[in-house]
Image 1 (cartoon, helix red, strand yellow):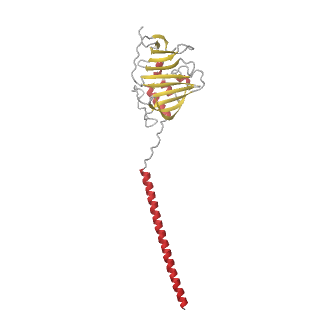
Image 2 (cartoon, helix red, strand yellow):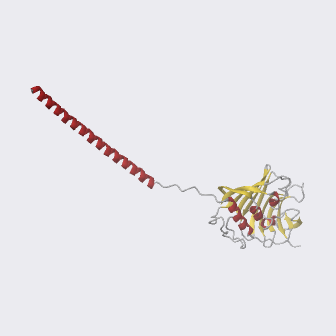
Image 3 (cartoon, rainbow, N blue to C red):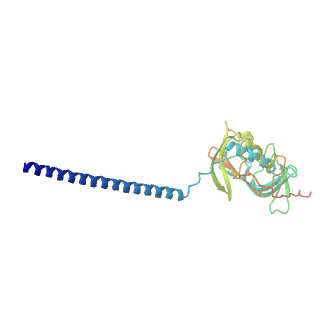
Length: 283
């Protein structure tokens, strides 16, 4: 009987020990869970706080639509009354002009004054000279004082055509095909958008004479146009009406390069709308 009582007391002590052990384990697990949850919550909060306090990088600037930019630039260029023109020819044969740097105005039409490396006849060497164009005549001078006539602009080179609405650079810009904006670049100190495309040789030929000779198909052309804020939509009218004279602002053409075979011709424009005066030589 004594042994049964002892056994009963032993069992009850074992049960109390087990309950205490299990309770302690449960309590420890609960505390651990709370601690872990708290750490997780704090870590998450810290991460969220860090994320919210970190500056968000602005999205990359979107390039304007190439075709729209071409259209705007053509309208702006069409209304220019004066501009400075630079043309450089590289590795192209049989062109009448090698380099030209001139101030051009269409008030009145077709006038220009500057320096050039030209040849009066095909096959002749290039001659560096000062020149002016007025009334469809080319006059040259060795020192810029006395100018003598050397022929019609159509037979030599007509720099005044650059501002001709029908055959000039505005017409070239307007007829660029497959225009695609490629990048933003700084050209001659001006922030520009680079646009690539193609041009029909007959369109570029008045600006760069004979560059279209023996060309089958189109020529590659790249334009760099002043980077200005475009209209709000593709259907919005230009901010500069085509009937108003350009004040020299807007999406001006800064540079254009036409490639033919392994050579090219580069056209630079600057001093948009800066007044130009050309005086016809006496005699």
